[in-house]
Image 1 (cartoon, rainbow, N blue to C red):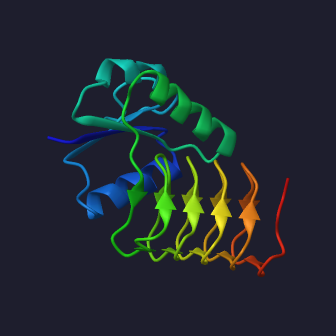
Image 2: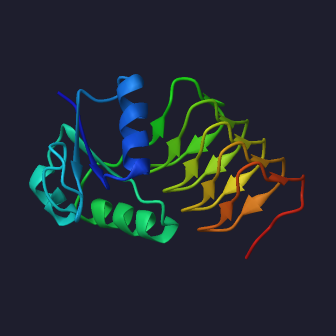
Length: 172
């Protein structure tokens, strides 16, 4: 039985739960959260070490881009598995790369030869065009578009509906 442990019981954590259950990626989902009280919350975030085994994956569902990537590195150091979460309605080109710890939400698209680095959120309806590099920890908000030949710097946030035109957005 495959299990996902989600850190964070906020709105983003619940969204990840919906995505993985609708995609039938995992048989069981549990939450760890330092503050929330709910029957689905089985402990605090640092309790993740108690769940590490070959059938369990971990996802840090934090909206804070830096924090999300820090947790992914912590999981990696503890030899805990971190999935890329991709909703079935999303399009990901077979020539694209989506690294561990990324979430590609419903109706998003990642086109040919695009690279989406560790810990990114490609939110509902967002588009990553061909030959784009999305560096680690980026959040592309709902219906944002990054057109061809762009590089989005680590930990950037592209707001809902924002369009980044070809060859125009290289943040350092």
